[in-house]
Amino acid sequence: MMYHATVPVFRHYLGQMALMVEKAGRGAMSAQLADSFTASQHFATAAGFTLRITCPLAGREVPDLPSALSPRLAVARATLGAMKPAMFEGAESRIIRHRAGFADLEQPASEFLLLFGLPNFFFHLTMGYAALRAAGVPLGKADFDGLHQYPADFRFD
Image (cartoon, rainbow, N blue to C red; front, top):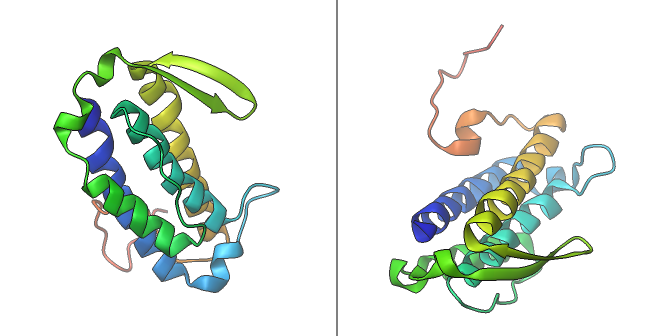
């Protein structure tokens, strides 16, 4: 369950992030909401969370990632692509020790994944998306999840 709830999900959304970054262009990546991170930093943080979540669940050390966004997305996606379901055997019984901001936490794997990992990944992904939207980048739900489809002239009124 831990593999299927993480690796394929993160690989899919890293691909969507890369498409949003490409659509937005370099200039828009400095967009931000209020005093939050820039879109670029939100996406970079989300990419980091993919490995910060999966590696401990797989019993591995979290590798360092490039700081530049495009290589960071590519390396995270490739690292996840090399992970196999067998690496997650026994993950449910692991206790994950980690930091959340300045808090030192110790959580059972399911709590780590469901209460910390997935919410933080999707928070940063969504904030990056929202910053780009607020800056006028023409992104929609289809860009976010890669699943929805709408006609080009469709509008919710």
